[in-house]
Length: 167
Image (cartoon, rainbow, N blue to C red; front, side):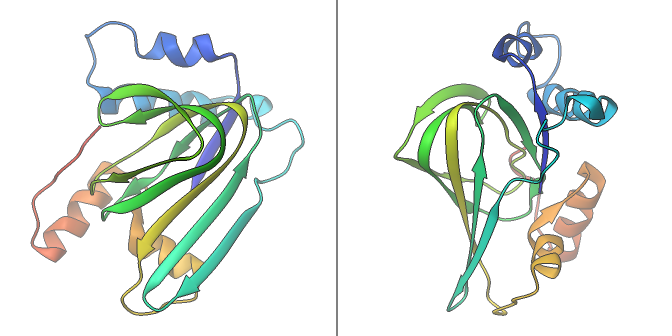
């Protein structure tokens, strides 16, 4: 669910200077830069460790992120709880980049697409409703996230909802 790159934090800050682009477009630009520069991906050549846990209609996803990484998540189709268990990150919350330190938690509205810079090794947990008690992580990812704005809007149309957070 994450695109990753190792860059100095000023690169993230620079993407958010000025008012000429909506926040969502800025996040998409960062994600595209990551995709276009695979040589800058995690130098260990590994995916981040991810733990998946399930409990009576709830899905927990825990990812360990090393310091120095920028991450861009997928678009979340539904509200979810975010928990920073360990570390320090500069994270997009709403339309602002906030410096957060563990322990820290907050709720993201549907439509959220997050970008973060990790200052100190971090553990990030998202907590999602899982009303069908699905255990297949790939199916859950398709149920809970969208790759593109178009896919997100289509999922809302199928559910009869209006778009919410687009930052």
